Length: 225
Image (cartoon, rainbow, N blue to C red; front, side, top):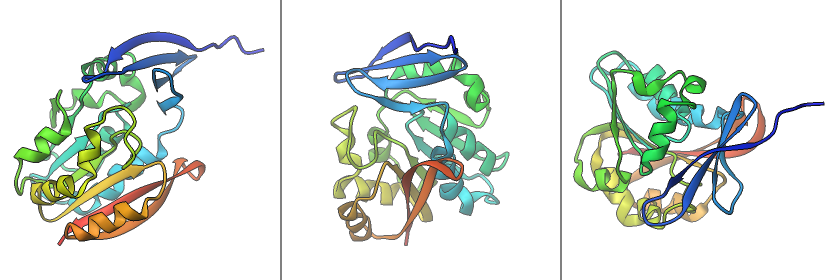
């Protein structure tokens, strides 16, 4: 009989209200929202990997590529983005909750290969929305793994990112031909329409949580025309 049991390791306050909780079960970790179920787990990260692989595939051979990752999570999207881009690239990761950054530098780091130690990474402990409002023609790819997709869970202001106003700022922050990649737990027809209305060419790609198995998720690929 297994002796593994779920243990609460740490908690982190979400700016503006709420709390994230880090749990360990054997060699694996999960992050949960207080009062809710798993938000993410080291057991399954296939769709997070795909988010970066799909979003950065056009920038693989580009010199001085610039990528923005919105939401550090367990570090898998960031690690996958680093595998896609070259030595001269810069990958900015924006994480709202400082505790999540500390967890990735500590107990979570080994699972994703300690991507925060890569010299190409710039960490911004800030709301990704603030960065999107201030940048113009700056990024070749923007990867958003914020909340559960267009339906926000942890922070009310995340809704702005997926609004027409937010998408307009994202369009402006991308370089011509740049790609916005958005992870979501499921489809959202209205969000697809907002992307097209904001000047993007849109592709919807189904991905699985764990290789060819696990829950079915969705990645939107929206290219700035």
